Length: 307
Ligand SMILES: Nc1ncnc2c1ncn2[C@@H]1O[C@H](COP(=O)(O)OP(=O)(O)OP(=O)(O)O)[C@@H](O)[C@H]1O
Image (cartoon, rainbow, N blue to C red; front, side, top):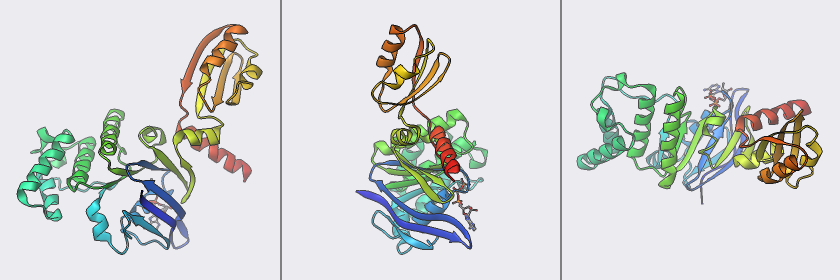
């Protein structure tokens, strides 16, 4: 079942087209990445899904609800982590969440139980009595996710969740997001850090100037754009390019002396190794998953070239 659906969703600010003709379907339990550079339309899309900004044309449905018509119902079921999380710095982590549970109208006992549950889950129980002004960026983001979980949402929408986090904190945060999927929460996240989020996303949509330029699973996109979802780096004797090229499933081979980069639609390491050994020597062989950064860069080089 599709949890998030958009049809021809468009937002213009005067002559600026922030989002154009967006057609998207995110399935229940999926982690979907809205990716793209700054200003490409990610935040505007999220705001339209939450009913926080009105589309110029087209429509959106979240859990079957129209966010513009029923913003409160959408809000009740959808957890939202904005790119700037707003907490009261003078209040402690626990007090901030207590404030949220009051807004949610939770009875006291239930509120306290849920606060403890989410703080423990986010690894913040020990620091619950510290003022949020003394929190690091990573702790604030985890508190933001704790707040999202307080309402036990069916859908979590996270805007640039790893922005400003150091690599380790980002890694940990991505693991926490993976945990949401494990309990069946549908996650839509935005990021311009393609390589960082690609591995937790089931599918991604790559934005370019308000338009969804590419949509699919990372491997599919790599296969479509780069000519192979598998990238194999080989160091062997020179002169093997044609033999490698002839292997079934190989899309492209780049050769520089005895160094080869082979893009294929399947894992062809064994065949490449056999050829290398039969026709000389094999020094190294490595399988690398192409990064979305490469897919994106290659795609836009071709788009620019075609233009
Ligand atoms: N309130 C607004 N008024 C006018 N233009 C806007 C407004 N909000 C966004 N825009 C423009 O719409 C375009 C898309 O912006 P948006 O914030 O959706 O991009 P983004 O992909 O989320 O970028 P970032 O990664 O910087 O958050 C940009 O050109 C931006 O300048």
